[in-house]
Length: 221
Image 1 (tube, helix red, strand yellow):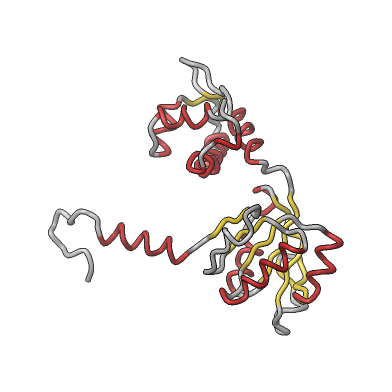
Image 2 (cartoon, rainbow, N blue to C red):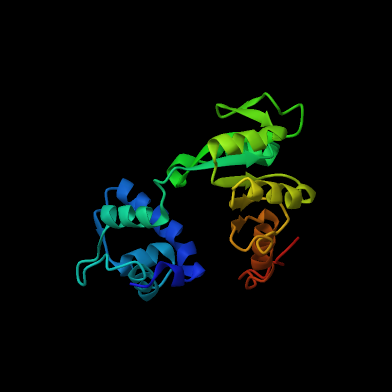
């Protein structure tokens, strides 16, 4: 088993996908699965799956495969999904509202405890049972509640100052939906940058560069 701090990010980023597929299998009543069967469902090689899981210990048995519920539980424990880390969200616009309303924080390791915005039209409203507070209340709230993570849904120009402010308040983990990358600004901060535009352009590239259709139709109209 590899030391946790030496495991590559590519392996770590596959763990949530394993967890999601295994949850689906468990819900469907599947009790046991081989690495080969799992590879077909996930589009990975059986060797890759075994290598990934061996980074965290031996979960399977040769000739028998993996117990789905046990492996799902083990990966959930590795991911820390039962931790319930306190989280806040800053920026209650359309994106922030969608995340606060539809993301299941509680089943993914976090507990959303506060939402903040600077707009007088947003302050005082309620999103998924949480009252939107004035961003000016961040200092008091963070000192009292000590959140671990902040979801940033603010405009790009606001993120630099906001991230510095939150970092000074002890918030050192960020789920960043702005278009500003500040990963290197605070070396000990943990930042997950989510670029929806990058994802869309990647999809566009894949469509644009796919093999020609059998009927010879152009790729774009």
